[in-house]
Image (cartoon, rainbow, N blue to C red; front, side, top):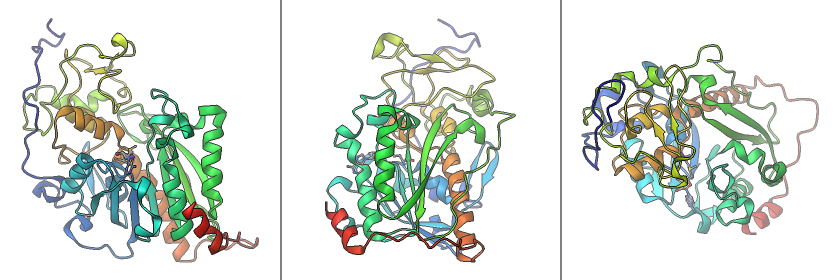
Length: 382
Ligand SMILES: C[S@@+](CC[C@H](N)C(=O)[O-])C[C@H]1O[C@@H](n2cnc3c(N)ncnc32)[C@H](O)[C@@H]1O
C-alpha cells in the first residue's frame, strides 16, 4: 500500500541509532544549555533531588536551557544533586544527556538517610497502577506504594518544596480516594499541597497529554507557588507543525528518526484504540507501551518514529536515546514533557525567589507546626 503522500512505505533502517554526542556534550547546544551541564553553578541556584528520574524529562525541564521548535527555554536557577531510578537503560540515557549525577538504585529498599538533603524534591512516582490504560491496582500493589519513598524523604529531610507527578486518572481512581490518601500522607509530614492538572497543548506541547502535579511547600513557609497560567489556549501547536520537516528524513541525520515499529496494528487489543493522527491538531498521547494502542503518522503510511515521539514530548533533537526502539519508546512515553517541567519549575523558582527575598508577607496566622522530629523519624522508619 502506498501512502497518500506518494512516499513509499518503509521499514526501520536500523535497530540502534547513530549519534556522536549526548545533549550535554553536543557543540550545537553549547550556547543555550544549562551551565550546570558544563559543571558551572548559576548564582542563587537551588538544590534539587530527583527520584524516579527516568531518562530525565522532568529534570531537563526543571533545569531548562534547551531549544524546542525554534524557541529557547531559558535555564532555571536549579541544580540537581542526584537523580535516581532503578532502570539501568533510563539512567544511561540520563547520564549521556544530562549529567553524571544519574544513578541506578532501587528506591524501595533505600533508607531515606541514604539520600542527600535538598531544598526541592522531585518525584514522578510510577503511574502504571493509576493509569486508565494500566491494570488499575492502585495502592494495592507494591508499585502503587512507591509514593511512600517521597513521604519518608519529606519526613526526614524536610525539603522546602516537593513536586510529585503522576497521571490524571489518579484523581478519579477509586472515587478519588487514592489521591486523597496520598495527599493526606504527604501533608502529615508538615506540608500543604495543591494539585495542578496541566494540559500540554495549553502550554504549546504538540500532543494531547495531561499530567497531575502535586505541588507541596513546607507548612511553616508563607505563601504558596502559583499555578502556571496557560499560554496557548487560543492557538494550539499541531502535530504537523512539530513534525513536517521530518517527513522526508528517513535516516539518522536526525538521531532516532530511522527507528520505528513496522507493525500496522497493536499486538494487544487487535488494533482497537489505534489512532491515526490528524494534520492541524495536537498528536494523541504518546504512550510508554509500544505494543498496545499505537499511533500512525498523519500523512505517511507508518507509525511514528522514536524521534517524532521524542519531539511530540518536547525533547530537543540533540537529546538522544541510545537504545533499540522498544526501550527508547518506553523511556520517552514515561517522561514528563520537558516543556511542562519548565513551566512548573518557573512557578517554583518564582516562589522561592519571593520567599527568600522576604517578598511574601508572613500571614497573621501562626505557622502550622511541623510534626515533632521524633514522630517524623518513626514515620520514616515505618
Ligand atoms: C513515570 S516514570 C518517571 C519519568 C521521569 N520523571 C521523566 O520525566 O523522565 C517512573 C520511573 O520510576 C522508575 N521506578 C519504578 N520502580 C522503581 C524503584 N523501585 N526504584 C527506582 N525507580 C523506580 C521507573 O524505572 C520509571 O523510570
